[in-house]
Length: 307
Image (cartoon, rainbow, N blue to C red; front, side):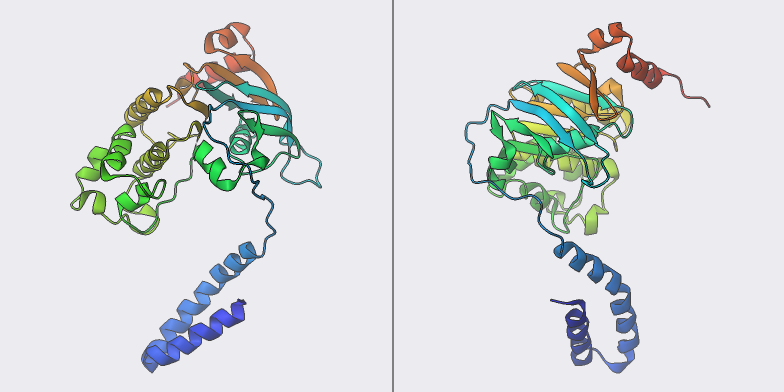
């Protein structure tokens, strides 16, 4: 359907259902919507770059491996975002990815969820290349909670159940409790039946982020990617959510991308990226003792803020 067709159809509807006095206002609405239509059709015309595989993966343990991974967003400019990444995340462990802004942290996490494909090398779960998996199997295996959250114009319950349509009310509320958002929802006049509003305007950034965390918890994927998942939370709420996530880490592989190093000190391994390459890896105490890039990041993170 072309933009011209959309405009013609809208004009016909206007003449049929609106009085003449309203035509000017409607015409203004149509004009202001043109840019949006153009963007929608622009995205619809983009070629599909991620194609599903056919393999179904069952009984996922959650071993994640990056094998000689190279990635760049523009294949023509020659600038690699990630270079020669070899990294193993054993099942049931927590790995933190840290580094300067632009070092490739978020890109690495997104490759683990196959939001992108590496140009070279492979990303594997339980030894299976993600490109071989069907989208359904991939979605069951890997969950992502990112900085950007999206809530639908529907009830809170429906927003949570979107992750798992067959979930019972009890399971929905249990996931909300784990994400430290149940009390906030229960206090609303209509509780879980409250309509969140367009793009979740009824909730603060931190509340929306906790709802997104609850949605992922409800789906219960064996591999979890947290990309600055607590970035919109105040310190007190962040600690509560971290405690909830810590309790859920048992038996789950977790990849945490973070700027605030205080949230990753207890990780089983910390991987420091520098200009798209693995510069250091180890536990918090090992890397601090190394007195390298990680130690410098810690020192800067702990430095008092000038007032």
